[in-house]
Amino acid sequence: MSSVRRHGGDTVEALFRAEYVGMVRLAYTLVGNTAEAEELVQDSFAEVHRHLEDIRRPGAYLRQTVVMRCRSLLRRRRVMQSHPPEVPNDLPGPAGELWDVLLKLTEDQRIAVVLRYYGGYRAAEVAEMLGIPAATVRSHVKRGLAALREELQP
Image 1: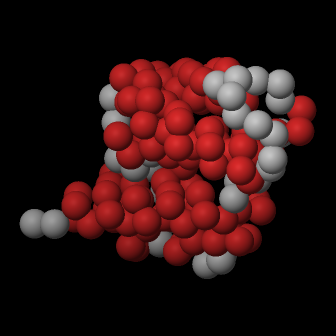
Image 2: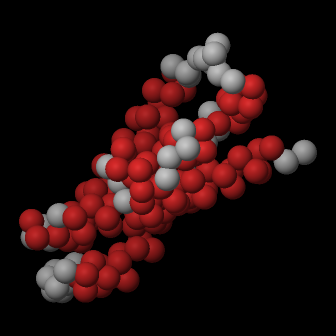
Image 3: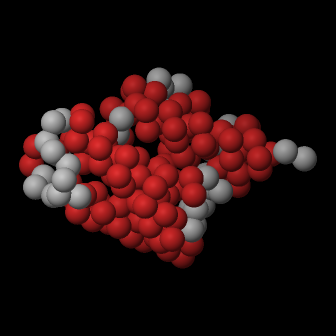
């Protein structure tokens, strides 16, 4: 993507137009889930934007970031499968009842939903805690709630 010129937001926008679909396709191929693939790619674009001044080849950096994030997700999945978390004994009623359903969410979605609704934090506060953009937190919460609704439907 050497034709992308460095003009801050213009660079990221041009990179997005040129690479988004291909990066989502790549991430989906690696992780096997469209929502997670889109999320990984969005987070990767955010990282490119944060480090744009230091990046010589934004397209190559983006691809590397997407692949690294996919590998990280796959490692977390393996760890979660081999060491599933135990149900805490002291969870209050509704949280205890939702434990099994919450475990079906991605880690990022679960953290965002729990902090937002159980912890009562605003999206901006959750974003600050996790070191990610508030828009990403809102995306995690939205997708997490959609997954919860789907799981809880009779």
